Amino acid sequence: MKPAPFDYERPASVAEACRILSEADGGATVIAGGQTLMPLLNLRMSQPFILVDIGRIAALQGVFRVGDGTRVGPMTRQADALDDPLLAAHLPALVTALGHVGHHQTRNRGTVGGSVALGEPAAEMPATAVALGAVLDLTSVRGTRKVPADAFYIGPYMTALEPDELLTGITYPDWPEGHLVLFREVARRPGDFALVGMVGAAVVENGIVTRAGLAWFGMGPTPIRMRQLEAALVGAALSGLDAHALAALGVADSAPFDDRHASAEYRRTVGRRILARALREAFALKETA
Image (cartoon, rainbow, N blue to C red; front, side):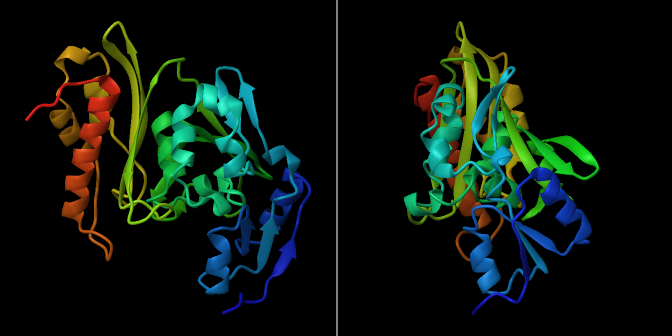
């Protein structure tokens, strides 16, 4: 199939893009990398009146240090982010997760912001934003508002982004040098969306966990933060941690479902096992029964 007819706009600035969105009365769709949107257009599952291509807006590209954090422009290509030295130094969990996003060919076109804004529940980038405590800048003609990533996702492909708003920045707070990265996912084939996945980071000082951020993907209608597990970890001594008990806490915060790919019970079982394995390896914990 071919897309339904639409008008095409290619703004050169954020202000121009926001003006177009404000005048479209909800009939516009923004295209970033297009790796998800183009198939939806061809299948006519998405039929916008106006397609707003933000690929020319230089202000939406690049990775920068901002105070005590790192700001990623939403139009930053995934392949570029994967090789970015600032992200490698300050956000290794993001780089690790990026290596599992799609395929090399799709990462050449796909953008970090496109994935974050789309809100695919089984995708790596939304869950990574939640786990690492990212804050999203949402801009319209009314101004810019900041929304924490864990408040941005409402349901499958449903976010706090209003029809006249544009994602203009993603700021990840710093994690100290030497922090631990936790990542696991299970997919049918490399590049597929995960059946079950988890991502996160943790800080250990003098044998005590002082900070933790962890989230599920593929385990519910949105990326899900593991709040109970984070609370159990922070302030705990490594010598007293039980990976199996902690993994059970993590799964308790998930909301798995049955679909054609896997059952909810499969997701709970696999999620508990990959999380326990990630915790054991990250914290060098001994195997327990």
